[in-house]
Length: 104
Image (cartoon, rainbow, N blue to C red; front, side, top):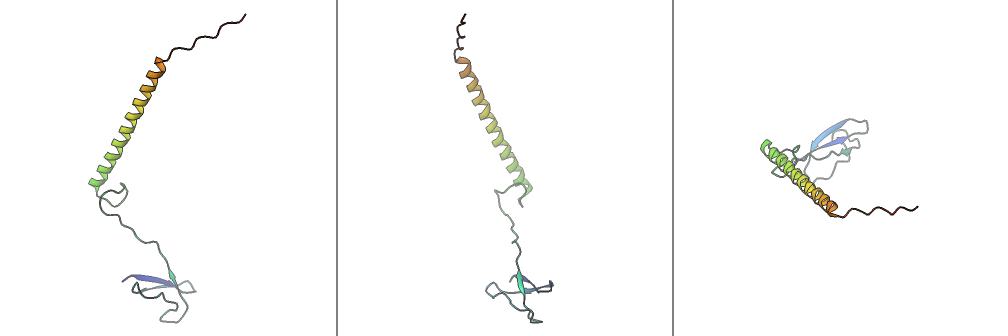
Protein backbone atom coordinates (compact mmCIF):
# COMPACT_ATOMS: atom_id res chain seq x y z
CA UNK A 1 0.00 0.00 0.00
CA UNK A 2 1.30 3.48 -0.81
CA UNK A 3 2.20 6.14 1.70
CA UNK A 4 0.54 9.53 1.19
CA UNK A 5 1.64 12.86 2.62
CA UNK A 6 -0.89 15.43 3.81
CA UNK A 7 -0.37 19.10 4.72
CA UNK A 8 -2.17 20.99 7.46
CA UNK A 9 -3.05 24.73 7.09
CA UNK A 10 -0.16 25.67 9.40
CA UNK A 11 2.32 24.05 6.95
CA UNK A 12 3.15 20.92 8.96
CA UNK A 13 2.85 17.56 7.22
CA UNK A 14 2.18 13.95 8.14
CA UNK A 15 2.21 10.65 6.29
CA UNK A 16 -0.38 7.91 6.32
CA UNK A 17 -0.59 4.52 4.60
CA UNK A 18 -3.75 4.11 2.52
CA UNK A 19 -5.09 1.77 -0.13
CA UNK A 20 -5.35 3.02 -3.70
CA UNK A 21 -9.09 2.63 -3.47
CA UNK A 22 -9.39 4.75 -0.27
CA UNK A 23 -10.63 8.32 -0.66
CA UNK A 24 -8.21 11.15 0.14
CA UNK A 25 -8.44 12.45 3.71
CA UNK A 26 -10.15 15.78 4.20
CA UNK A 27 -9.39 16.10 7.94
CA UNK A 28 -6.44 15.06 10.12
CA UNK A 29 -7.46 11.82 11.90
CA UNK A 30 -5.76 12.96 15.15
CA UNK A 31 -6.77 16.62 15.41
CA UNK A 32 -9.68 17.02 12.98
CA UNK A 33 -7.94 19.95 11.20
CA UNK A 34 -8.61 20.21 7.43
CA UNK A 35 -5.79 18.77 5.30
CA UNK A 36 -4.75 18.55 1.64
CA UNK A 37 -2.88 15.71 -0.06
CA UNK A 38 0.63 16.64 -1.22
CA UNK A 39 1.38 15.43 -4.73
CA UNK A 40 4.82 14.26 -5.84
CA UNK A 41 6.26 13.26 -9.21
CA UNK A 42 6.39 9.47 -9.51
CA UNK A 43 9.74 7.71 -9.41
CA UNK A 44 10.52 6.03 -12.74
CA UNK A 45 13.12 3.31 -13.12
CA UNK A 46 14.02 2.18 -16.64
CA UNK A 47 14.88 -1.48 -16.83
CA UNK A 48 15.92 -3.62 -19.76
CA UNK A 49 17.78 -2.82 -22.94
CA UNK A 50 17.22 0.06 -25.30
CA UNK A 51 17.67 3.06 -23.02
CA UNK A 52 20.05 5.98 -23.13
CA UNK A 53 23.52 5.83 -21.57
CA UNK A 54 22.44 8.00 -18.62
CA UNK A 55 19.49 5.76 -17.74
CA UNK A 56 19.59 2.85 -15.31
CA UNK A 57 21.08 0.32 -17.74
CA UNK A 58 24.15 -1.83 -17.23
CA UNK A 59 27.62 -0.61 -18.13
CA UNK A 60 27.88 -3.25 -20.85
CA UNK A 61 24.58 -2.08 -22.34
CA UNK A 62 25.73 1.55 -22.19
CA UNK A 63 28.93 0.74 -24.05
CA UNK A 64 26.96 -1.08 -26.74
CA UNK A 65 24.62 1.90 -27.12
CA UNK A 66 27.51 4.34 -27.36
CA UNK A 67 29.21 2.15 -29.99
CA UNK A 68 25.98 1.91 -32.01
CA UNK A 69 25.57 5.69 -31.86
CA UNK A 70 29.11 6.31 -33.09
CA UNK A 71 28.66 3.71 -35.86
CA UNK A 72 25.53 5.54 -36.98
CA UNK A 73 27.42 8.85 -37.01
CA UNK A 74 30.23 7.28 -39.05
CA UNK A 75 27.72 5.93 -41.59
CA UNK A 76 26.14 9.40 -41.85
CA UNK A 77 29.59 10.99 -42.39
CA UNK A 78 30.42 8.44 -45.11
CA UNK A 79 27.14 9.15 -46.88
CA UNK A 80 27.84 12.91 -46.70
CA UNK A 81 31.35 12.44 -48.13
CA UNK A 82 30.00 10.36 -51.03
CA UNK A 83 27.37 12.95 -51.86
CA UNK A 84 29.95 15.74 -51.80
CA UNK A 85 32.32 13.77 -54.07
CA UNK A 86 29.50 13.10 -56.55
CA UNK A 87 28.56 16.79 -56.56
CA UNK A 88 32.17 17.78 -57.30
CA UNK A 89 32.31 15.27 -60.19
CA UNK A 90 29.12 16.65 -61.77
CA UNK A 91 30.34 20.22 -61.37
CA UNK A 92 33.70 19.32 -62.94
CA UNK A 93 31.96 17.61 -65.87
CA UNK A 94 29.96 20.73 -66.72
CA UNK A 95 31.49 22.84 -69.49
CA UNK A 96 32.98 26.13 -68.42
CA UNK A 97 30.78 29.12 -69.19
CA UNK A 98 31.85 31.15 -72.24
CA UNK A 99 33.10 34.61 -71.48
CA UNK A 100 30.82 37.47 -72.48
CA UNK A 101 31.82 39.19 -75.76
CA UNK A 102 33.62 42.49 -75.32
CA UNK A 103 31.79 45.53 -76.53
CA UNK A 104 33.81 48.49 -77.77
